[in-house]
Amino acid sequence: MWGPAMGLPPRLALSVLAGPGRSCILGSGTAARKDWQARNCRGFSDFYLQPLFDPDFDESPFYASKSRSEPTRHVACKKLARNLVRNLLGFQKPSRQLVLECNPGPGILTEALLKAGARVVAFESEKSFIPHLKSLRSNRFGELQVVHSDFFKMDPRHQEIIKPEYDSRFIFQNLGIKAVPWSAGVPIKVFGILPNKDERRILWKILFDLYSCESIYRYGRVELNLFVTEKQFQRLIATPKRPDLYHVLSVLWQVACDIKFIHMEPWSSFSVHTENGHLEKSKLQESLNSMKQNLYFIQMTPRRGLFTENLSPLNYDIFFHMVKHCFGKRSAPIIQHLRSLSTIEPIDILRQVRIRPGWTVLKLYPQDFKRVFETIESSEDSVFKWVYDDSLEDIVV
Image (cartoon, rainbow, N blue to C red; front, side):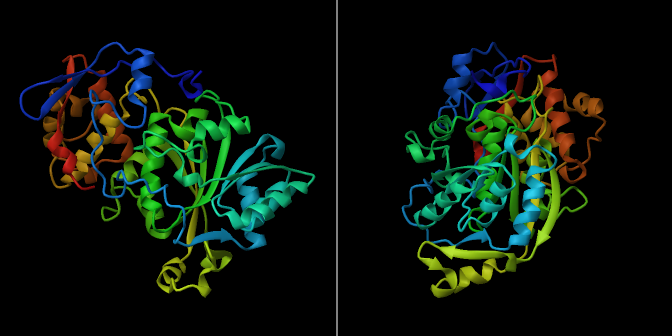
């Protein structure tokens, strides 16, 4: 059974009538389970709206590289590890909390979690760390399982065949992890330090997984506890009050999750490694300098009420398209965007959500975008609600 689907309201599926030229019209129809499953097999069906191109989320199989030239950061400070344990476990009984730790390296945090009695699954991509991590199993308080895999490279979205070490279904089944309803609590907590090079790209990939209830989000409302750079942190929490940082990622993440800032940590609290050892001994001095920056620890918990009758894993891609379209031309009034996107009369939609027609996207908060989308989806004025032009796929976000 597809766990996260339990408790979700039924959703009208999408149908597409292709007309002359590049435009097509999206409407509503009856959804069959097999249609939903078929649409989510490594990419979207030709009969569904395709997501807009994003320069940080292309189709290159970046998981395929056998070596890791980019440095990775690990928790090196025991005081920081103790603080992270308190943040991750909270007031819950440690034995009931499952923590997935991404690239733990020397295992400073792993050991602290085990001493607190937590159940830990360590996803480590570097073979040289595996023996030491496995030796921590002797800790008599917690429970540890070690997986030789890079957590952030699991379930690549554009590959027909996925290697077992990158397939979450295969890994989670072996670990005995089962899905829970989306309406339930947080079944899994993930801890990780996003790599500098792929930080934005990983955030995009996780967004697709979250809204489609794929990959780790098949198993429920998985909570992310991440260290990110200051630039990405500021962008994730940005609102119209910071127009220079307000972006598509800001809207989509804030609609999807409750984002909580925990604390800022100096770069000296982390060790930096490459595949061949310490970065200081390598020639990657430029990479070292880029990693000498403070990191921001944030907690991102998917909202229990994210999915509704009018926004679901079946039509989230249209919501993505709407938001990206609006940010493609920030200076244009929202009414102009809606006339390009939908067959529904925009004045009526804006009146219902109490948004002025002349406002630009820099006047709209994240939840405003969701309200506009759901109002259009719930409209009964037209069978066909969305107009899609494939030329819009070239908009750079």
